[in-house]
Length: 163
Image (spheres, helix red, strand yellow):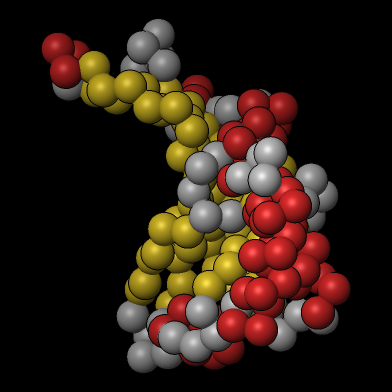
């Protein structure tokens, strides 16, 4: 998992790795961008969880455009936006975001899929681990888990002090 800001055009807006990790860990959702099976761009907002190491996990139905697209081309991009603030009077927006280049994989082993679902429960339903585990066990057969291996990622931010 290489944090690399060398390709960011606005080098004056770089986000340090510690701040980028905080966004990755706490982001509410991300946008998965793929090339669909007919060669068209496709982006979809999704809940996700980061495992604290090299993988992001997302869950979805067991069939659909997203999965067909990943089967054809597992190279994907994932974007998470942190804090934003529109400054109307200055015609600008403060923001922070990260973009991750990943390789998507599905058809994971049962224990990895269950671990991912439990990580999602921990993130989105803290305090409900017991009932969340039961729900995850019930959903396991009808839920696909996609694992995104982070290859390269970068981050940037704009504050009112940076124009």
